Image 1 (cartoon, each protein chain N blue to C red):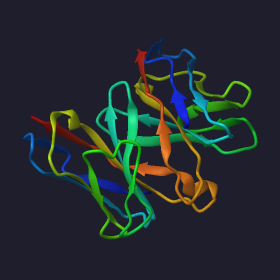
Image 2 (image 1 turned 90 degrees about the vertical axis):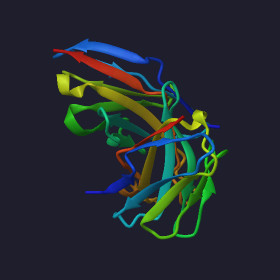
Image 3 (image 1 turned 120 degrees about the horizontal axis):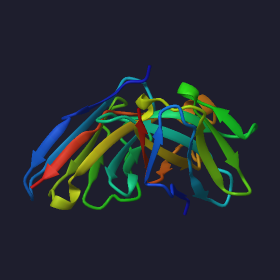
Amino acid sequence: EAAVTQSPRNKVAVTGGKVTLSCNQTNNHNNMYWYRQDTGHGLRLIHYSYGAGSTEKGDIPDGYKASRPSQENFSLILELATPSQTSVYFCASGDWVGGRDQDTQYFGPGTRLLVL
Amino acid sequence: AQSVTQPDARVTVSEGASLQLRCKYSYSATPYLFWYVQYPRQGLQLLLKYYSGDPVVQGVNGFEAEFSKSNSSFHLRKASVHWSDSAVYFCAVSMATGGNNKLTFGQGTVLSVIP
């Protein structure tokens, strides 16, 4: 069974502060993703990675940075947090090698972030 | 750009009734199609996926979905719902090219099953 964990599960931050959300996967997947979930928008892709050392911008990257120091870990960084970044953040991992079984993304439990 | 529309924000059905959750996509080619479910305070879990072939695909817990190229749709169905099916359901599409399967999600449909 695929395993993606996120920490912290809940976070309260102050406006202008730095926030780091962490994600760890034990699936040995090459690809990892960060999404945010907001009512009425579903999940939107912030950043993703093809493997250690790589980060790519998703659909809504402004105000966020990402870091992929290893195959297992993928972090989302808010250098200057704003109230508009209050949301639920999900990490996912997956692989695409042209095969059907490898196309599934496996999601972590989410991190609830409140920026005051 | 590809997009996904789930026209029903909320659906309420009685336990034992049949269910259909609608999903329409916009994409120039046939994408890979997914349905995910999110139970309260949890991450998303895959229900089923479609790539090609038989347009009706079976998923977990008695769910199935039917792909229609002519209607650009991928509706989710279940013959008889249980109260435990109450959750948020997301339709998603992927181009699955270039070694990356970025997903584009619909807005989600909140399903409430009345016992």
